[in-house]
Amino acid sequence: MSVIHRLAGAAYGTHLGDQIALVSVPLVAALVFNASAELIGILVACQSVAHLLGSIPFGVLVDQRQQRSLAIVSSVISLFGFTCAGLGVWAGNVVWFGASITLAGFGTVLFALTALSILPKTAPPSGLARANASIETPRAICSFIVPLIIGLVVAKVAAPLIYVAAACAALGALLFTASLPTFETSQAPHVSRITQILEGGRYVVAHKLLLAISFCAIFWNLAFAALLVVLVPTIRDIYQFNPGSFGVALSAFGLAAATGTWLSGLIADKLAPSTVLLFGPGSSAIAAACLTLIGPGSPDYLMHACFFGLGFGPSMWLNAQNSVRQLVTPPALLGRVNAVIQSAIYGIRPLGALIGGAVAGAAGPEVGIMFVALAFAASFAVSLFSGLRRIESYESLTAPEAA
Image (cartoon, rainbow, N blue to C red):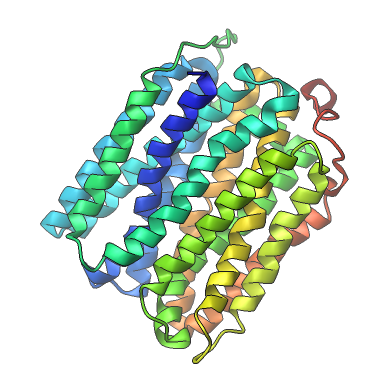
């Protein structure tokens, strides 16, 4: 079994557990803890805050430590976190539950950063986009299957069992990460941790493409995190759909992500990267605008279609921007640069969740959906007015040119 296939197997386990948490946290918060919109926002933020707190220090570790060991540690962290989350639900302790979800999130962050740094060591530049697609496909497929299952079983199955399933997924990831070979590590001169972190940050800020990717991701993920919080009260109070439609909508998002990721691997050498990098956020802006037009009496498939639009283009964008940053970044800096951009992609989600909960609680879900649509539009504007629209091929992107 190749290294890429082993990483893909570990990705299935890691993202299966992560998607179970992503979908079930707001539902468990509402059904088990009878949480308000504000508390739902806090709990959703607990899961994503790991990206904000863990990305930078983990990026330093990925550049210096044995990446096989870090992949194994990531699976162990996820396994322990999901086990504790199930115990927190069983005990009815919302603080314990939130802390455990945060811990499990650290495992996902460490695995993602480690995998992104391993791939350039196992695939040539011409095959890097396909390799990235193979690692992103598990995330996309899980984001399709998990919401559908959670939406069907959340009211029928004891909530702690949901996190037992997540722990089992993490155990599967551990088996795959343990089978990885060792990798060459960078022999960089000893410098302080702060200097190492700042070096990665400076490279991102100085590189116009990486900076544009970061800001595009900031606005997109701010919007998406807010949408996850706003959607539950919107479905209940505005759309007046069945609560189970929340899971179906996220399943439509996942189906779109799986389709987009699969397609991006097939056409990576047939489309200019600029096309994908504009299409992703642009399609999101259109789909989010359509969400503001849904009202009572509308068929629920309109919401599902909007979520398909939110998942299809951005999944292709994610694969494209992964390849761009791997190609324009020197190998010795890749872990830290990935960490900075991962912080932008996911670290903003706690803020988005908190803002979404605050807006929905203070001004109502209608205003919350409008805020979401504006944030998605801002993400598209960043791509449209940046150098991302001028990238004609991956072969033209090299670290020496960018340095």
